[in-house]
Image 1 (cartoon, rainbow, N blue to C red):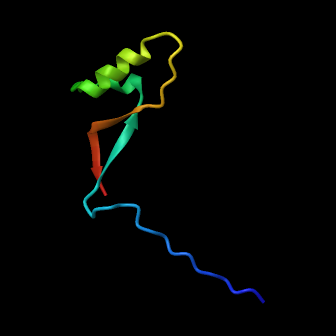
Image 2: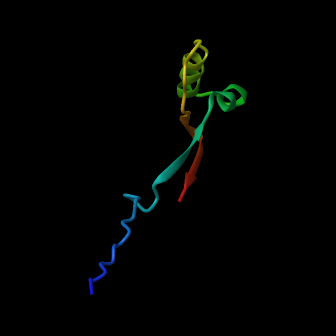
Image 3: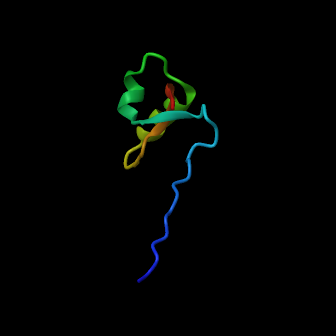
Length: 65
């Protein structure tokens, strides 16, 4: 019989109070009341025809886990 090795999961957080930021799309940045520089730059990029975006981390939606 083969021995089964147990694999431990590593903690993905480097620090206990590391922040997680939500990834938001350009539509969320457009209606945001407090538009940040990163969001405005993303809006400008996405306004070009043919651009494909995957979202941008939003500092205003930070969560502590």
